[in-house]
Every structure is written in structure tokens, then in C-alpha cells.
Amino acid sequence: MAIQSPNPVVRLRDVHKAYGSGAGRTPVLRGVSLEVQSGEVVALVGQSGSGKSTLLNIVGGLDDADSGGVEVLGVDYAVARDAALSRLRNERIGFVFQFFNLLDHMDCLANVILPASFARETRGGPRGAIERGRAVLDRVGLTELAHRRPSELSGGQKQRVAIARALFHSPELLLCDEPTGNLDTDTGREVIELFTDINRKDGVTLLIVTHEERVSSTAGRVIRISDGCILDGDGQAEARAEERSA
Image 1 (cartoon, rainbow, N blue to C red):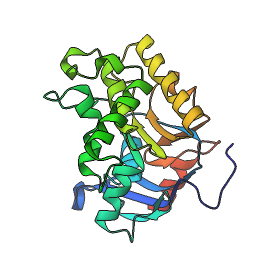
Image 2 (tube, rainbow, N blue to C red):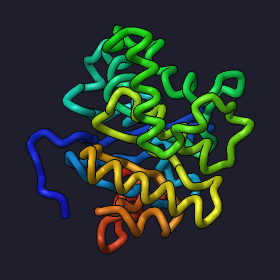
Image 3 (tube, rainbow, N blue to C red):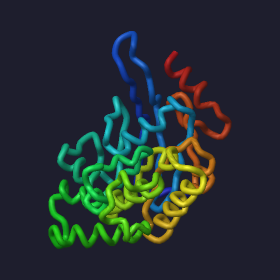
């Protein structure tokens, strides 16, 4: 169990989210509250449609909650301006997705330094960005592939490039959505070991959405979500959600 801090990296309070309108409105998150402390590795697990990816997108500022409080790295999303949220996403939060999201017309190094294009400034200018890009590629063991195109890489190599890109600005929080979902067992294990190493050596906090036990078993804490509710130890969250909506 993580030690509770007055300033957690992630703090959600009674977050609700639904899609659609009228009779077709579908609740996805139903009063989710949770905290993630600095330096934790937290796995968010649940079946498809349980709301876990929506929750991750809200934490990352990629989607808005309908109601409730969202505070990440000390930034209150309810009052933050769009420019402040953009800087937070680009400079302090790293994102790793299941489908890599690499640009095929760019080589690996260009993909990795892409966040520099959206930053207010990069230490050392363009040359500094390239040096930083090479450093994070080395961090994930792909120095020799800097000038390969994504189409020339294996799935595991593509994910490592995506992780290097996420590490470009030395984020404090890494958000990962099914990061091993497209990888075979051995390659997935290598990526998990890389996450563990990043957390241990760099102190990066990780929140990982997964349905795979091989990922959740390595986390320091597992949060289970079902039908848009966080399950407690007795599995009664769904019942309480039904009572609230009755």
C-alpha cells in the first residue's frame, strides 16, 4: 500500500463520464475516486468497456470529465487554461499506446524528438533536441536504429521508440494504454522490464491500463475497475453505483 501524500501525482474525486445524449447516453465512469502517489507503478485492470482507457485519457487531459475533480501534478484541470494543459501533456506527462503512433515518413530519431516541436523551448535548441533524442534512444537500447523508419522495425522495437519519445522531456508521469497488447510474450516481457527499470532508476510514476496479468503482476498496486466503478476488496462497487443511480 502506498504511503498517502497531501500532494499525490494523480488525484481524482467522484469523476463521472458518459458518451452520447438523451436516451442513448451511456455512462462510462460512475463516481471514480483514486490517488496515485509519486514513484508508484499502478496497474488499472478491467474487462473491455469497463472504463479504464477513458479514465486514463481523462488523467492525461485527452478527454474531459463530465463532473468531479481531476488534479494531476498539482494542476487542477477545472481551472487550468488550454495552454497550461498542453504544456503539462507535452513536458511533464509521457504517453505510450498499444498501436505505437509513430510517423512512418520519419526515422526513429525524428519520431523521438517530435515533442520538441510543440515545446516552448528545448534546452540547447535543435542540436540539443537531437542530442536528447539520441540519449533516450540509447536509454531504450536502440541507438543503432536511430535512422531506420518504423516500417523497418519489429513490434517490440516500435514500442521502444514510442517509449523513448515519451521519455524525451523527462516526464514525471508515464501513462500507458495496453503497452504490450500487440507484442508477443518475450517482447512484452522486455517492455515490462524496461518500465520497471525506468521507474526504479528515474523515479517516474507509471499508470498502466492493461488486461494482461503479466503486466499487472509487476505493478506495486493494482486498481480494478468494472462498469465504470473502482472495485474495493469486497467487490461491492457495482452495487453501490446502482444504488446511486436508482
